[in-house]
Image: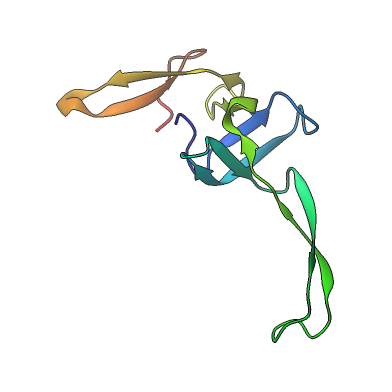
Length: 103
């Protein structure tokens, strides 16, 4: 996957289109990302030992990785990613707009 934890991303489609956020978690097996305070859902919880009274909890839901685009920290624009090898075979992500390394 091209997106990693703590990256800033822009949502390019869906109900959250146009919003920016920070990636909390990445799920490569299902090709989804969890973005901070975006795609909020409500879950009804039963009473248990921690919560004496049941309540409605709002939490983030994962978004498909194809619906988000990485925002370059240098040029502050949404960009596609290129991979280049540096010395000793280390691969880094490169912004296609400004040709700066992102990692």
